[in-house]
Amino acid sequence: MSKYTEKRLLGEWVIDPTDFNAIEKYGIVSMKFKENGQLIYRNHFIGETKIMLLTYQAQDGLLFTNQPSSLQEEKTAYFFTPEGNLILLYESTPSRFVRSSP
Image 1 (cartoon, rainbow, N blue to C red):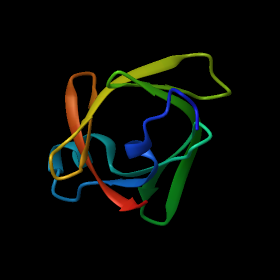
Image 2: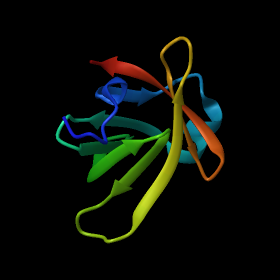
Image 3: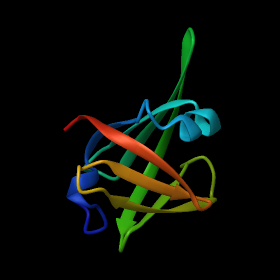
């Protein structure tokens, strides 16, 4: 595992179906964080799913993501709730994710 990967991130996460603000802004989203630094980001639409293959690093409560085809790095703050949910703060807007699978 990379020294810039947080073990609690690993696995699959889906946007919390009760987080209506995040769903309105991003749609139905799932993310799979892999141990090798790969992040599979899926946006689920009726009849199709769009997939982005990203790389990521996590350090000190910040998530750094990159598309290999683009040189622009995105930075997102994150933390975990006491219940184990993942909160992403992208552009200061929180979105809540629940674990789908380890």
